[in-house]
Image 1: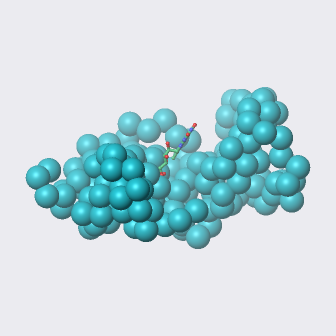
Image 2: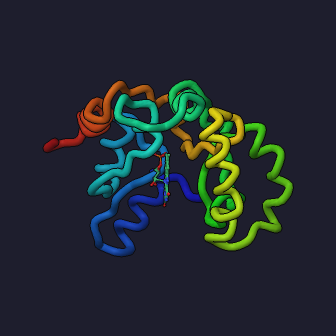
Length: 157
Ligand SMILES: Cc1cc2nc3c(=O)[nH]c(=O)nc-3n(C[C@H](O)[C@H](O)[C@H](O)COP(=O)(O)O)c2cc1C
């Protein structure tokens, strides 16, 4: 749960290996700073959810493009592994069960029928949306726009 700006240089120094930074990366200045701090590459997740190429449903796109990073939570509820999701009504309804969550992949099997039926019925409010702390700052039209923007201030790119 350490912030990337502290984590990247610490991991780079400790391992001497190339470091790929993931989590909340969506801007040029941010990526350039992480590159200077020791990141050799980046993973973009949330930044791609609202793009033309994304197959995410409308409500998921909304979370990525118009949501707020502070409205996300980390939880093991839906997969058994810690992941960051948007705090929707579904999450609020079940978050009291966090301590009783089975290990991965139990919860995935448990929720799969609900998510399949919800998707088929267009009931977005019954889906879970994986969205990171860059929610609300990830409005890119196309994947190439996101990649070009994020890498644009990195020396040598
Ligand atoms: C829609 C979506 C689905 C994801 N699914 C998985 C997954 O199944 N397994 C996994 O390890 N990470 C998954 N991730 C996490 C990404 O691989 C990546 O680490 C993360 O999105 C980077 O943080 P960011 O979203 O803040 O850019 C997912 C992310 C998003 C946005």
